[in-house]
Amino acid sequence: MADEIEQRPPSQPAPSHQMNWPKATLWMVVILVISFNSMIMLKSCLNAPANLADKTANAIGKAGHALATVAAAFNRGTITTTLVGYGTTISNHQYLQFATISQREKFERAQQSTTAFGYVPLPEVVVVAEAPVTYTYYLDLNEKWELVRKDNIIHVFTPPIRANKPAVDVSAISYEVKKGYFKSDEALENLKRSVTSLATLRAKENIQLARQTGRDEVTKFVENWLARSFADGTNFYVKIYFPGEKRPEEIEVARPRD
Image (cartoon, rainbow, N blue to C red; front, top):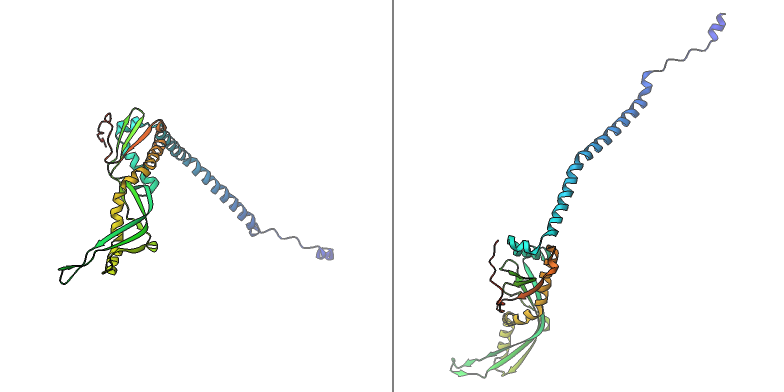
């Protein structure tokens, strides 16, 4: 009997509570994930009204802008302000470049020299320089623009036409002594130094040509501004008047309101 008792296998030890930590950790992770997702959903719900309000405000703003009319802009006195803002936005500066003229120019310089303390005149020397020159003309958006609406026509009176510094292709300049030979080298050197100044004077002389070539560009600029800024912008014709051009008798002087 004692042998049987001794041969009986020992009983299994009771499971320890320390063996359950993997399950506890797993449950903690699950709880954290659920809590994090709940916080995200709660935040989205809280922000939804604000986001919806922002989108609605933007939509209303766009709709109001689209419904604006040319007549309303003239009544509020914001017509020129809108034009300047549009021009500044599309050009990234305050100038509207509207005409570029490239042509080969001929610059002539006559020089009369003397000798014997100025008492004996030397033969006249005439030198000529030819060079390709590019002239760029622009209108300043910050200067006075006058707009008058008459029926379905927008009459636009622009500020003065201005020219950038002429671009002279110095690599293609040719020089020639046209007359005389005394001190011709000196005359040529003086001409070389004055080519840029002579081109600047020629730029002013070419303003009339800039009017002819650039009128269509200014017209397109104003037409695009009307079409993009006003719901009825495409219903109007545009006529451009540069300084010095006659104002139609039926057009009264516009009185700026802004």
